[in-house]
Length: 26
Image (cartoon, rainbow, N blue to C red; front, side, top):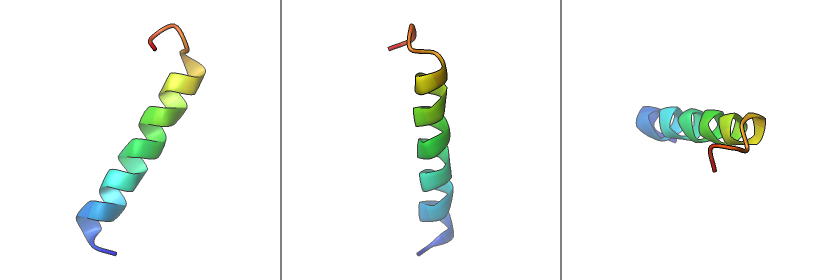
């Protein structure tokens, strides 16, 4: 796995968690 893929995965998980914490956004 490349560095940018790992970074992208972390960002995706962070985004999903943010959506779960703030369901009003979605």
